[in-house]
Image (cartoon, rainbow, N blue to C red; front, side):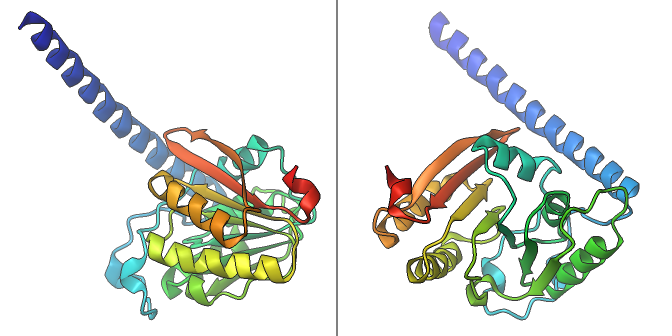
Length: 242
């Protein structure tokens, strides 16, 4: 009985530590976000009421609330697999207020695209891209598109896609199907970064492998703080598969 009580106490203590760790992490993230917005004269904070999002899409209820990523997320994700920005178009699917777009602007991408189905968030992202200060812009070609992700036309060029848990898996599958179809039609390097989507990564992995005929590769999987990052590649040619 004493052992059981000790195990119970240990479990309880572990749960309390996890709660405090999560709360502390949330406050650090919120505080750093406020400082970031003040310093750069932008608005990237979360907590927007659904009624204010101005969403016309039939998939309105399948989206997941906007939650800004830490500034370092994109650079750390690229570093995980030593992937360089040069020669790639960067596409943030479900870009929200565009914080990841801002972090992409300091890297030498060929161009940057944000796709967002909330017209309110799209307008905020456009303002942020236009007015951000105290960053070195290395990619001047930035576009924010107000569109449902399932209707977005996949560019026929090397692309790095970024997904920060923007919607339910049923929508994710449609978007990934569009990406793979475009890749099979015109093979070129395509990378897909999935941030904070650990619960659906097994489904994503199986779907990409099946739809691509086994070409899709898991290139990296890690934690950035408390959030997961998983990176898949659709290689340009068969040599990348060996």
